[in-house]
Image (cartoon, rainbow, N blue to C red; front, side, top):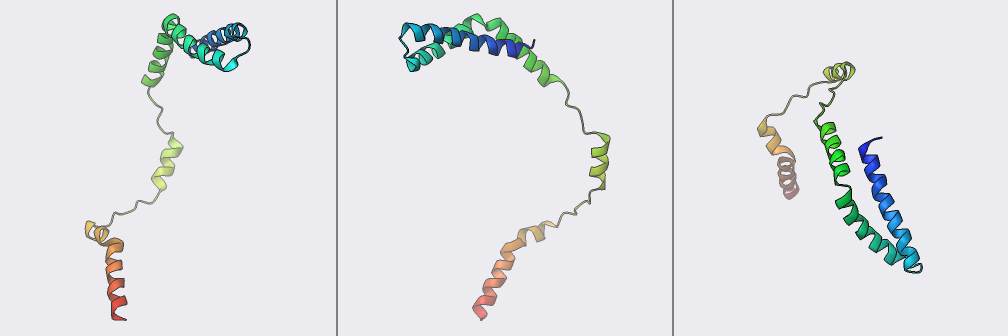
Length: 111
C-alpha cells in the first residue's frame, strides 16, 4: 500500500478514536469534542507518525525528480504544421491603438 494512503488513514484514525472518546466523556458535546480531537490528533500524529511522514515526503520527492515525458511524435507533427506568425516591427507595435485614437480625436475636432 502507498505510504501517503497509510499516513492519511492513520491520521484520520487517530482523530476518529479521540473524537469518539471525547464525545462520550463530554456527554455529546460534538463541537468541543471535534476541536479538542483535532488539536490532539495533530500533536499525536506529528510525534508518533514522523517516520511514516518522512516516507511520504521521500515518495513525493522521488516522484518529482522523475523526468517528465516529452510530447509524442503526433503532437510534434501537428505543431510543425501551424503557421508561423511574423512579428511586427517595434515601431508598428508601439503606435498601435494609441495612434488611431489620436487621429480619431483630430478628425473629431475638425468636424
